[in-house]
Image 1 (cartoon, rainbow, N blue to C red):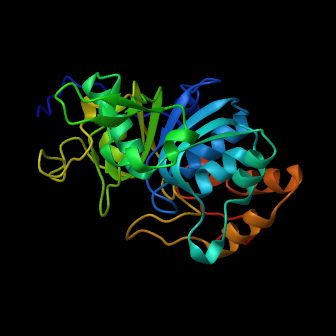
Image 2: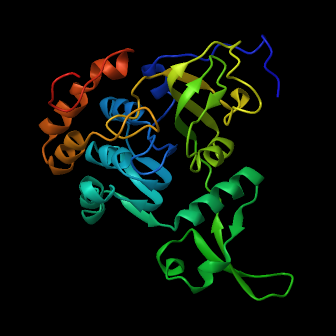
Amino acid sequence: MKWGNDVPNKLTSLQEAVALVGDGNVLAFGGNTLNRAPMAFARELARRGVKNLRFIKTAAAHDIDLLCAAGCVATVDAGFISYETQYGLANHYRRAVEQGVVKANEHACYTVMCALRAAISGAPFMPVRGLVVSDLLRENPAFSVVEDPFGTGPVAVVRAMRPDVAVIHVHKCDSRGNAIIEGPRYEDELLVRAAKTVIVTTEAVVADSSSEISAKTVQIPGFLVHSVVHLPGGAKPAACYQQYDPDEKVLQAFSQAKTPEALEAYLNSYLKQDHSSGHKGGWGYATR
């Protein structure tokens, strides 16, 4: 891995990074459920009113729920969309699916991973043997059954999924895009390798010459990254490992909200935090 001085500075603003996402794009978010989701990026998408997004994620929660409430989503390919136990269901996502506004393409988490691996390898599909005995074959046109050319019988396959843009929230990153994830990585490395464009949002920016940046510590190499956005607290009100926990009051209030005014109040309460470093906020609660 080369860390040369000829690599350009990729630091940019949240607004400029979000402008890379267009209506109808296939978008993938890193993290898992309420852990390390790129929530500041999701809020800015909602503020911009991006439409007809097609989402890929193994297990999502507040990120997809928010964008369904904002009317930004057309389809979701995921194994799981819901909050963790104490917060209940993803009500905005569920309502959008029930009303036919959002098409839910049901996966297992592993089939999402296999679809990403297919995209990484340049293959049109990836075998997933266990699907042969699954009802998912009847529910999702991304699955099919083919005959094994080597004679072992029928094999289920999942169609490759390649995101137009993947957005990953990390703990540390330098200006060249070399990123460090502390704690669980989930499927973030698959998303980065499968996507056409990668955006990293980061809790902290470290010096390009920092001893923290090395081939042993970096999970996302800078040559795969298009843009870096410095966003302390960028996963709030979800969690970031060893940085902060989920904000229970904000998440529960959002789950029960039903009006456009409530959504606008939520987005506005994070405006300063999302657009500048060093600010903290929540939905209708005192700055802390």
